[in-house]
Image (cartoon, rainbow, N blue to C red; front, top):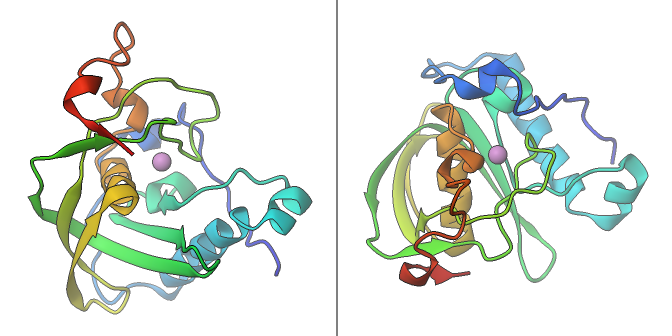
Length: 183
Ligand code: NI
């Protein structure tokens, strides 16, 4: 596999702190191609052979804005136990419901735009239901839980100019940990 040529913006870039715009259908061919390139990049970043060859940091999700396109779309590539990958293209998403139960990733969240270690808890809903569109403009509804729910919320935040680090209280990074379930 050849690594797609994409440049991921760093957290210092102002664009990452702006609200992305709704996508209008039909999508441009370039935007569609970019979404697939981003998915391929994420898949390769989770395969040892390529992380070594290309010196990649493993990532599960990427929002359009992270590659310099401030439009409301993101992709997620999630590895299964049998080494296959589930791939999601999510456009103009809205969260239609969320669980009361909150969770957080024990080892901390990561982001391909944040190139440093950040300790602390990022509260997320254990389950959410999202309404969105696929690349052809067809509406769908998806219910996600656990790490996939965290990934969806992390990416939806990107569309609103929010990074996971914004959720962490620097003075008290483990605030309220006892009120949430660690995953
Ligand atoms: Ni991120």
